[in-house]
Length: 232
Figure (cartoon, rainbow, N blue to C red):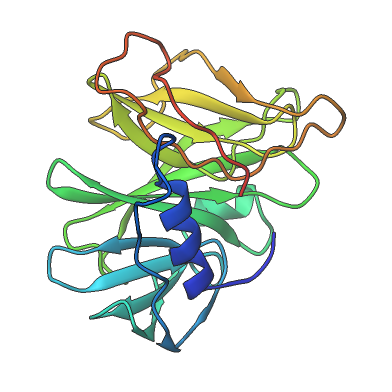
């Protein structure tokens, strides 16, 4: 994984959201020039209901940046003041990765991965907050895990609601990206949920990293829903 400036993130997000049938005469805004804290790793950005923009990222105890205009970004500490104790079961330094932030049912939901390089003994955690601001998060433990006996790796979560259900794509290496259905009330994987295979490469190590997903049809009857999976 590499370090990205936030401007690059915004440009990539714009490209990712272009419809497949976009014509050449459609124009889109250029990335904004940025000031302040510009260096960030694996960011997730959301416009909060209080009017601010927040970006959470790999680094620290899920590092945070705040902005009022998407132009100037200030360091805002971390999502958590201290690491939840269970993180140490998956990483000796309690180092979380690749958060995913969304809003539903009156709360913000923050998903993130805890693992170590070179192993799929990994976990995706979930936390909630009424405001989405740094320091306001309540951790709820693991949403989904993987063990060294599994053919997948529970890292890099991306959550989407489709067909009245809640889904989470995840994965890197260990046969590529996967998807699992979540319980909307807990935000965690349903008991005995099927782990669907989304994308892989034809040759070892089969790496497809950091999925971004979007619903590509107004109505679909597939399980999991029709999605795009992109290598980040």
